[in-house]
Image (spheres, rainbow, N blue to C red):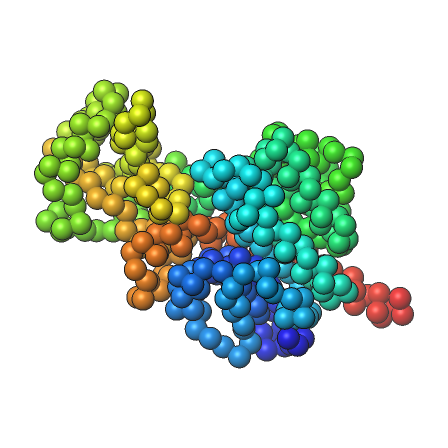
Amino acid sequence: MGQVTGAGGGRPGVLEFFAGIGLARMGLEAAGFRVVWANDSEPNKAAMYGTQFPASADHEFALGDIGQVRADDLPRGASLAWASSPCTDLSLAGGRAGLAGAHSGAFWHFIRLLKGLDGDAPGAVVLENVIGLATSHGGEDIKAAIRAFNGLGYSVDVLAIDARRFVPQSRLRLFLVGAKNPPEAAPGPAGELRPGWLQWVHEDKTLRTHRAALPAAPAPKLTGLGDLVEDIPPDDDRWWDHDRTEAFMASLSQTQRERVEALRRAAGARHRTAYRRTRGGAAVWEVRADDLAGCLRTARGGSSKQAVVRLGDGRLQARWMTPRECARLMGAGGYDLSAARANQALFGFGDAVAVPVVAWLAEHYLMPLVRGAAAAAGARAAAGG
């Protein structure tokens, strides 16, 4: 491909690897970036991406295995490369094979392509993944990832951000931010975005790391689920019938049942989320005690799907969470779902990064980083250096 040009009105260009349904793009572009190239290997995700982002002359979507992408296929001149690489081998739900796994090992193709860009590689990169990356193989996987970025000239910052700071969903994710021209070190306490369990990374003298000064992120939400639940009439067929609801109640533990019954008898309607767990070899339902959703997951089975429970005024009803509710919980309430099947949408949102998390990181960290690098380069050129 050619050079990233000014078609975006001066907005820094981004290469988006493992793009999924495009939620990272939504956050990046909300902060002033312009995604010029993206890829993913799953046709269902690509179809949703294409509906949300119709084809245009200044963007290319490459559907297929990243192992088949060559550096020559990528546009030159991008300021940022974003990678939400597969987390299957790093998450608690996966096989914990780490970066050597068939899925999460795709990270090494990301490194291969950055290396292939050579002098045209972006000045900043981001790797987003589950927090399991920090502990996988006793920390060896995250060290390998940082060393790989170091080998390409990037210093790396490591942050943990919970989507709960922006939306009523518990969703903690890890962000490795690589910079060829890192900002001045942030003195003082590490801050809540770099919790104690991550400090060993910055203290490892074999790794080239930095800590950028950042503003305080919003405080974690304590409520808000009810504001995002769709207003579905009580007689809608999506609510479970009497027998299924009774089976749901029967599976609850005594503690769970007592809490649910108290909410059912209370005045006024409220909502809770529920999900199935295996306890003692049997499938049981557990209902969250707070006004938040649990972490959305890829809908490969019943245990991955969340139910919404409406309680109050003597009534209890339960149903599966809708795609629109999942979109809202990811900060993408306006996402175009017109052509998406229900399970396709649930899978796509469960395997994505929350939009407002990306937007906050892009506004407060990534945009200043790339603008600062551009200004420094301009100053060097003006000085003849």
